[in-house]
Image (cartoon, rainbow, N blue to C red; front, side, top):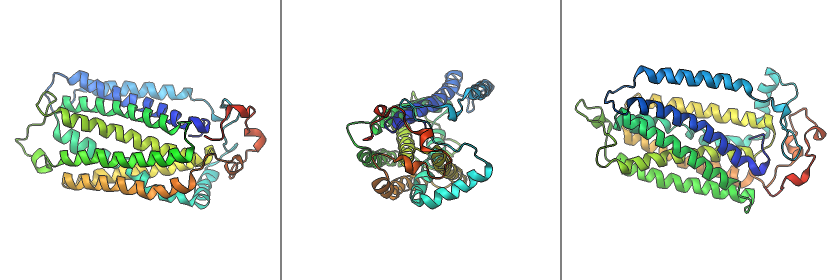
Length: 334
């Protein structure tokens, strides 16, 4: 959100989300390949060995990350950061951000909803309804569609023919439309089974070779597409509010912190054996409601361009240190 030019933020977020979910696709392919011909209810030990090896590789690869102070954009501008941040200055920055950008609280329900539905998708649909190999196949399709959704929404949100304000409004409206369409299809599917049915001892979990699999399969794929659309839009909206790396880090901290809170509350509710339809309704209502609550921020706070003077507040950088050396490389409309 802080590194790219304003007209590139959607693509940067999309590339991040594609790489992020490529890991999930690989993670789903491993148990699919190892359990494709297995009817056992659990994955085998080799699945965990593969995950450990991948995590170790990722840990080592992270050591190659570039120092953000060395990042220079195409127009010669630099990322706005604190030169000498401390624990104290960063904690103070959180409160400064809440005071100066108080409107961010209207995005908190949006943040809360962004991971709330994972428990429903993974536990109440994929795990409850399907056997092991079919769950693995569904996961491959789910995370693959995340990559597609991120590319589509990221590309649209950078579309140069429309102003940034227009793209923000249309993007949020498109997300609300998807919420009603995809989760409306989910409602029709959820009516076909209950928690009591799937937890019965004689329940035979569905396999991808069973008749009637294709329709729910596409629904699960669109659930993945929707997740990417929601997350990409969230990151892009946050990124459109500032180019200040410190402020965006605080925004991202609020986003991931509240998102994780939602991701922890949801499974605790599921552990109480709440009816699947009740959990579905809570998810659908929270998603739709959070978009409506976020709309005033998009309508009133997203501008066509963020002024540099506004971004230099609460930093120790000067204009001369971060200003573009090649103004022709930027487009203020974006």
